[in-house]
Image (cartoon, rainbow, N blue to C red):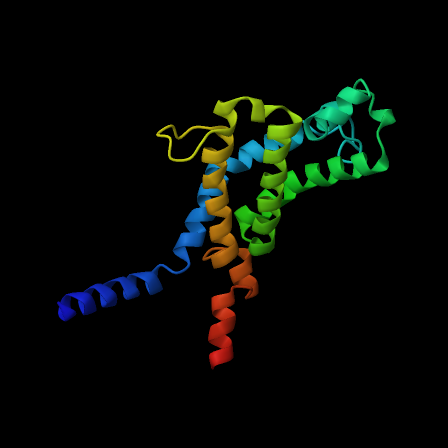
Length: 192
């Protein structure tokens, strides 16, 4: 039995070392393949008209991010504060920049942490701001044999991908690796 355990440990330890940078690369690929276009399309709907559209968000941007506040002011953005403007602009930029950083693998851990925060705020806004909490199919439930609820099921997979990047970094084929920002490379250099 001990030979079998030794064989198992040797085989999988070697596999783990050989593929150490592969898991984060695959996480970035899955993020790019499934979520990049989603976030960029969402961000594009928030841009205002003209060259300064990235500084003057659309009315829809405010309605997406602050639905209750927009209802209260009858969708007149001039009645909202500078705080509302700053949050909408920052959210729009984050929706463009953080996914890009993840895909190219630059400041990946920080970008993934930022996306985790973004998705948490997005989910809470969907549930409480847009009334999704009143629809059980939107919130969903774990362990219910139905894997397609928007919040608990789908976003759990998003979070797993993002947490993988926070823990493991960008992996191979990344700007982080080129710049030497991968923790495993730093540990190796310190050991020498």
